Image 1 (cartoon, rainbow, N blue to C red):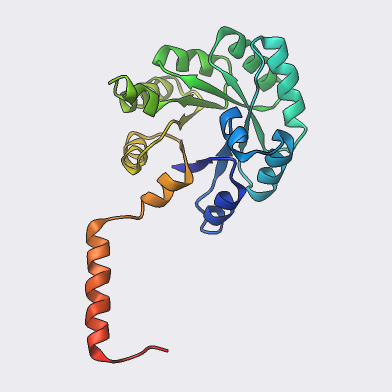
Image 2: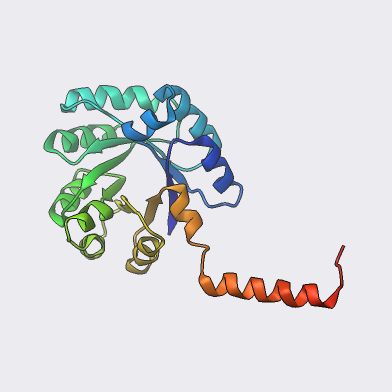
Length: 217
């Protein structure tokens, strides 16, 4: 499973990229706002840091506006993936932009029917929002499984990008189900390393080593 980092924090991306934990990046207007930087400036910097897709989101409500914004965003770098919402206008924009050979990430997916439409429209990525469904007491991972089954049934090329990932357990479940990609905040990716027994084992080893009075260096 590929790891995309859901952030516009270039320092956090750089840290994870050094460990080969970044296959791409997703951004959105809220993340850009938190960065306090110009959208084109920060997106260009991120595109230089990673080889994989960097999702940059359109903000227009109509297809023509999304297409125009998508074309402008695509000028930033060759690895830009244009994000459009899963609306009828978003699907229209997706079809035009993918026909032009551009990567398109169709976002804000909350049903298998929506995911099916996005695949038919040629989406490069479909982004089902796991955490937001969980907030409504709906199993977000069940949606990932449904989309995986549908896409496998018909050999759709659209990649499932599990989004709104909030826990390390979400990452594990997405991998088990077969999501192609999971995008998560840096803190969630880093939390995957944590286990109480690992911490306990390290503590015991260090205590035993200290009792020997020896040094390696």
